[in-house]
Length: 251
Image (tube, rainbow, N blue to C red):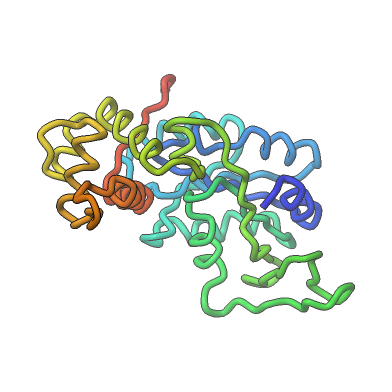
């Protein structure tokens, strides 16, 4: 999805729900999206997803900091924590259409599915008919409240660890290496415990994963580090290995 697609969807929305990762709120916030929302006079609410992956006091510090700018609702779509509170919060803007946006891998689709639930109803796909949204499908999640069923995927930007957190597309080994180096600084010992390695270096960690999973090129007998990198990144996105950042300024 391009920024133009997000703009089109935003034209149809009353509220923009920006989904961020509770482990890395600053990295997964999009200042460009927030600026666009303000300029268009839309309401912006931040859903701090994956809150189950950080200690409560850390989550509270981030909420305190971000809520100075925008309303924040902590949730875990995966564990269904805070999702009813999020629904009730969005009802404050009813009648309203909500666009859910954020970088890849922050859990937008999971939040859409939680909000839709089993009893949501698709609106008409016919132009100029009730519930029609240009190029998108709207779902009525309850009376007066709709969500656009097309997650606003913000184009990933940045490099190194930022690109990893934002779901960027780059060389898998390079991305995994950035993840390993950052994890070893922020949470020493995490990768040793997770993968049974003696040293938390990119080569050591990826080689250990490749050997354990049998990722070996048959023709040369060399380890397939790209496949190992893919496993590591997926473990990170799913929260199997998890670490977090703490805000610099706290109350």
